[in-house]
Amino acid sequence: AQSVTQPDARVTVSEGASLQLRCKYSYSATPYLFWYVQYPRQGLQLLLKYYSGDPVVQGVNSFEAEFSKSNSSFHLQKASVHWSDSAVYFCALSMYGGSNAKLTFGKGTKLSVKS
Amino acid sequence: AQTIHQWPVAEIKAVGSPLSLGCTIKGKSSPNLYWYWQATGGTLQQLFYSITVGQVESVVQLNLSASRPKDDQFILSTEKLLLSHSGFYLCAWSPQVSGNTLYFGEGSRLIVV
Picture 1 (tube, each protein chain N blue to C red):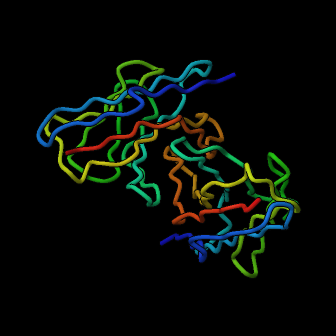
Picture 2 (tube, chains in turn blue, green; picture 1 turned 120 degrees about the horizontal axis):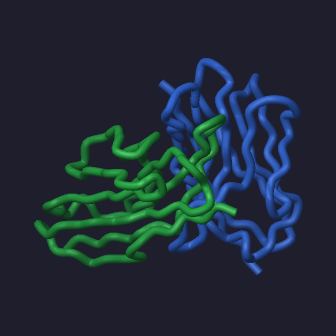
């Protein structure tokens, strides 16, 4: 069965510092991989997605993620965080091949940016 | 551009009372539609999905039901709420073709007391 692990429940960084949020997945083939962000009391917003091609994908708001098949990872990165990046970040995978684009989510990482 | 609207934004309901949450998608014809549930502080779990009007598939059993009365509308309901129904309910859509990317609404927060 597929699964997504986000090993860090909480991450705190200073404004202007670089950021890496970790995501490991378990799936026999290469899945669709996503990062979503959830601001307080809001829905999920898509940051970026990956299926094939260049393992480094660019997303909104200067976020990028790097896919590693050998490590089964899809880590999210940002060179310089802003206080407004404080939110919960979810990594997810999809094995879409039929009518249900079911996403399997990790438990999320809560990012706090200190000013 | 596509927009997704959920209602109500929040509800406080009593155990045993009925519930109806709604979701409308504008600007996209015949989308696939989904309901997800997020327990407080938890991850997201898919509840239902629908690929066409009148057809809904249940993914997990939580004493909830869903219906798709129109192409652009998805309804989540129950006749009797349980305390365990509390949480955040998110509606999402994906394109029918190459529909692996989900786009979420703003969610409806439910507190059952």
